[in-house]
Image 1: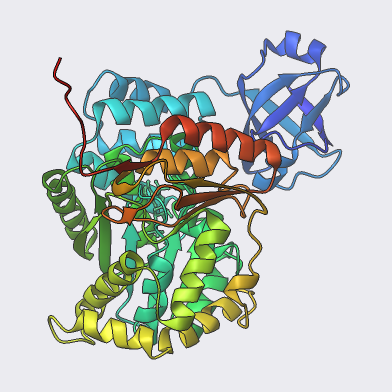
Image 2: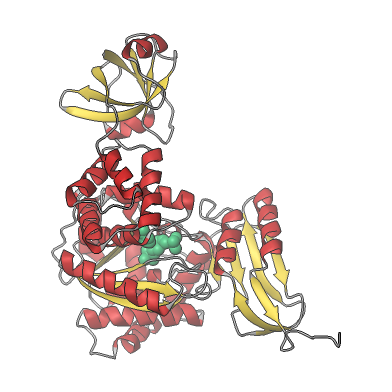
Length: 503
Ligand SMILES: O=P(O)(O)OC[C@H]1O[C@H](OP(=O)(O)O)[C@H](O)[C@@H]1O
Ligand SMILES: O=c1cc[nH]c(=O)[nH]1
């Protein structure tokens, strides 16, 4: 049917197309059916909302649809039932545990990018990957499809380095230190990050506290050619556009299927033109990879996938058994990261991991002799060169280079938990820490999160502070306190673990 466009001022997080009840009856359209709007050669897919907010012969479009194509009020378009996309059949094939062919994977990714697949089908796809997985052929096809449906960056400063963590460990602000250290050594490192997937703050969420992270590819090209680095959000770019759509489904389910994670990460690295990529696999209890054996297998997958993409990949298996540093949550982590860059000092876990990863990149990039990278990275950090470079990056990304970490606002609704007995910290539960920080409002509330005062192995006396919850709203703080009481994220045990009576 043909209809006149009515622009309606609402965002629905979906591509909503309003159809008048009578028109819908005639066209046999039902709520959530897929329709395509054809205006000239442009085709946009949306899902039907039946409503008499629009008259007969009109079609209402939400603001989301306008992001896909700037329809003008009153424009005549063809509204055509689109039926079920072909790629839904391939999703069902994966549900049944079959191997997908390259063309089938390409069809799924193209339909995700063209918004022909709705949340329902995308969640089904992500879930089927979680359950049935992907082999290396499928992962390579998925990676290239994800990268090639988006734009690719062409930076002519070579060699191009990159670093990416598979994430999963709370407080993982490491790469905010790694990037300026590596760039200060004269290497080029165009870092893209996703927002939180399973954690309480993704690197993009943290950097956004003190600089913009949403840029176009041209802007990134300018930033990187000017300062040699960037710390931006991959989702804002049209880099591997399917990535941020599937990450939304992963976040909702708090899962990160291995095959999709490999493709998500490497598609972004491929799209940035990165030639030397270091992958960080935090390993330990309560993170995505629990054993070194699993980490080594995943490392081999990353290296193999890199080979197929023409990228040289190395992998660092890092300690992920407890949070990195002392802070969890966007603003708290921003404070800690910037203060470590400014002073060259900070929590051992953060400094050790950052100089370790940066050191490997300096060796991969040929600016440090084998085995000397970490020492060089530490010198760059302690000399203040990394901070100088970070200020350039912050300024280039629209932030204030004279920022003072302690002035970054954090949640002022706080509650501190203390040690119930004297003894030793025997475990810190990563998943509980993340859940408490998210209950407190992170990452949406930038100031929400946790400050940790102890690490595994440290001795505490009864009444010593263990951690403080920060929130921006009382209600959130209360929820986080209840969860903290129930989960007891920090376990204290005396040397006498148990007394078995003379029963
Ligand atoms: O921990 P979760 O949220 O599961 O994983 C997502 C995080 O891991 C990666 O970190 P980085 O950008 O390499 O520092 C992503 O970019 C994102 O920040
Ligand atoms: O960027 C990332 C990081 C972890 N997992 C993903 O899927 N993407």
